[in-house]
Length: 312
Image 1: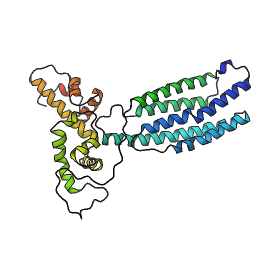
Image 2 (image 1 turned 180 degrees about the vertical axis):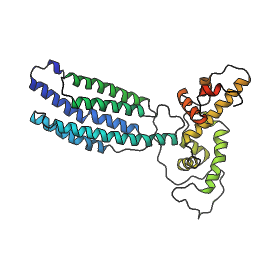
Image 3 (image 1 turned 180 degrees about the horizontal axis):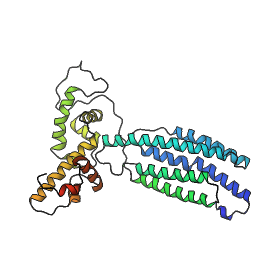
Image 4 (image 1 turned 90 degrees about the horizontal axis):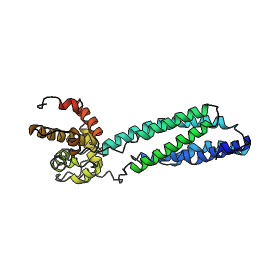
């Protein structure tokens, strides 16, 4: 509603109260729903969001029916506490989500949602300023503009992020290709990787992933690789954990070794070397992702490494 075109203070208050009620029932809950659904490591129930916003809706209904702002300070205090709780939850959820991504995907481009969380934190900070500042109507329009930008950003993220849903699998193991028959009395405790399977996964990875250079497929997932070698996602993930690495680190390590081979081949034949092009040929879709992974593995930047003697 164009508040600037309203003449009486009562009309302005009524418009403001209606807008606050509608926002608490639609815009703000929808933002949280979108953020939650971006975290695809597991299905999160949405009913807690309705429970969280119920007191705010009740408070706004009370303000609207009484045509006053008497309950507004309580609504603001509750909203700020809810925002702080949401930030704590999102930090923990995003850390877990990041580990889930590294355990299941070789390529993390357009999968991380930290940007959306940072934008959320900025919005909440602006809301704090807005809630604790008693100034003119310009703050309302600033909030509307920022909210519109935030919604557009979330819509863009929803459109660009990949569908990372993984079919639910049972914990029952699929026999490994080439594995010998095992005693039926062999038991798996605490989902630990059976010894026979543990001894076979390494050679199978070499046969089906490393030798045919399957790691060059940028969107290769843990589930796809597990199906290829004849095991399941759980056991393959446990194999990488027993090696002290994640699936993402395993694939990136193979890609970086491939990059080093390509670099040495080009340098030996005195061909012009472009690190970015070689990174793309090594399975990386993003040069920034390659640079971060390279520095983590080699302890130096790509530029520093290329300036060293070719023997290193």
